[in-house]
Image (cartoon, rainbow, N blue to C red):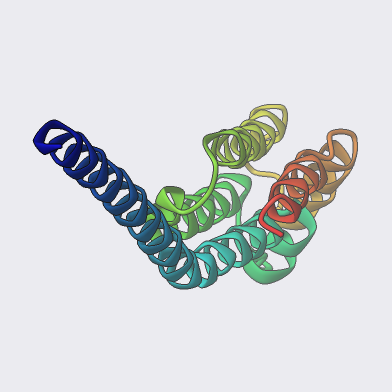
Length: 166
């Protein structure tokens, strides 16, 4: 009879330990889910803001927009080129920290778009007489940029990535 009581007591203890373990694991899992939800509720607005800022950056360095904002009458090709490059790089440096909130693929595409636009700005300037006025340079730049829609391509990748957040 003593042995039976000991076996039943051991079985009861094992059952209590197993049930307690399951309850603790379930509680920890629920807390992890809640913590994940809380983290997402904080991170998601920051991510969306970063994507918005990078979309704005791309729009601002799009050659049509850039020339409209920066172009000045009476400038030489070199002066206009310098103003355009300064604006592109300055805007990029201003938004550099946003890379921590967006995917590496989108960040790479944004950097590639920036580099491609810089290449277009420099290539068109190199093909022109340095004494040419900035209006002719701006026109040539817009024609060259229209042949290579780097901003539109980068924006498409950015928009696709944002859709993954929802």
